[in-house]
Amino acid sequence: MTSTVPNAVEHADEQQPPITMFGPDFPYAYDDFLDHPAGLGQIPATEHGTEVAIIGGGLSGIVAAYELMKMGLKPVVYEADQIGGRLRTVGFEGCEESLTAEMGAMRFPPSSTALQHYIDLVGLETRPFPNPLAEATPSTVVDLKGESHYAETIDDLPQVYRDVADAWNKCLEEGADFSDMNRAMRERDVPRIREIWVRLVEKLDNQTFYGFLCDSEAFSSFRHREIFGQVGFGTGGWDTDFPNSILEILRVVYTEADDHHRGIVGGSQQLPLRLWEREPEKIVHWPYGTSLKSLHVDGEPRPAVTRLHRTAGNRITVTDASGDIRTYQAAIFTAQSWMLLSKIQCDDGLFPIDHWTAIERTHYMESSKLFVPVDRPFWLDKAVDDRGNPTGRDVMSMTLTDRMTRGTYLLDDGPDRPAVICLSYTWCDDSLKWLPLSANERMEVMLKSLGEIYPNVDIRKHIIGNPVTVSWENEPYFMGAFKANLPGHYRYQRRLFTHFMQDRLPEDKRGIFLAGDDISWTAGWAEGAVQTALNAVWGVMHHFGGATDAANPGPGDVYDEIAPV
Image (tube, rainbow, N blue to C red; front, side):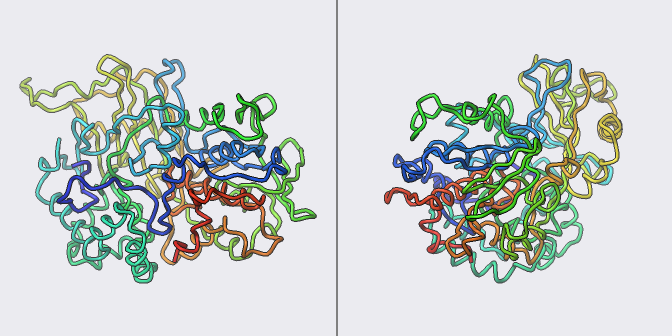
């Protein structure tokens, strides 16, 4: 088992094809598109060298810029803070550089196949991430209502946890045709995927995650629902997601997005940074040795965008924080969509009114983390009882609890190396509880909570540096961690995701393309950032009169066949 509560019904056939996060709303094979020798498409030679604004230097913006550069366009990247967005890796003051903390994305499922294309492209390594009860996790402690249970596999936990696991599996089968959809997605059976999903969207669009559980006979017990919310499946408790649309959760479980996670060795921010500096072997118009970095003055992006408006000829005019004003035939906006409502002055005419409504209705979840560096992975020491006899247990474990910390992760790089503890990773209301506290104040509360779970462990004596923390809802260029649709929001998400298809829009509403993980169907996952970047690349290429190779149709070429319901 890779999780406290499995998120999938066990499969009889272990030799099934791998799954990919390409659906079920838009079952397009982005990994095949990327891997095809024909490439992503071409633009007319008359457009080579034309500037395109890329607003936001997170993963989506950098992927889009990189691919457009390869086609012969000149991306101009604007970034308010630092390249990487929510792929943010930080160090600890006074500690060796190899000791890092992932403030945003830190774990990636194998089903993120388009993301993996770029990880491989820039030569990064991954390794298993120590989630609850994962194979890479020596032990897990589940601490609820003051009672702790130590486990190395789910079989070590009391029967009630296995009952909750069974209830979740039954709930998925009976209410969401899990096995049938999972099989169709593995086989890339698009007609069957659409047949199942169309019915479920109609049936469940107005249903919350919690309501879905309550409607299942398997979860008739409140105690089972409570444990499920506090302990969850895959990465920990999911009660913070209970108010969200069940469709959001089904996308996660169908694509196994919460399974078999891997972390990027050295930190996830290396991915966009390496793409920024990468000199592609196959490139049009630009000389060999060109990179995004080399196309920018002093190798740096333009500063924050402060205004976006339309000017004559349906151009997009961008004003940045330095006062510089530039006008473009096309632009891609990849920052958090709420930036268009607050930090950036925008013309109402920038988007159709229905798209503005969708942007305004986007629901973001809060998230916070706090990390401390320690001298070594002391948690692997073996515990002794009050009489000094060895218990065979680790002195400390990956911890799930209903206390303030909620999830504590132990991250090491070998037995004799300095290590890192994520003392707390929380979402939504649990995250807001930390918001008024400084990093040191947060750490003190966390150490107190963990001290109640591990009374014989002195975590503090192992700490070798100051804590680092983040509350994404308090970050000025984010105002939240990631999008999570509420019931009834399917229509809004569809408008945002399909915005790259602009032939049916009025001419004065074309030319600016939305991308980023909050535009995708799988927000909170880097794969969604990559997929929407590729949609926007196709949109810009089409806008300039370009086309894909007939042997490798892009997402816009097959759109009418697989468009979201």
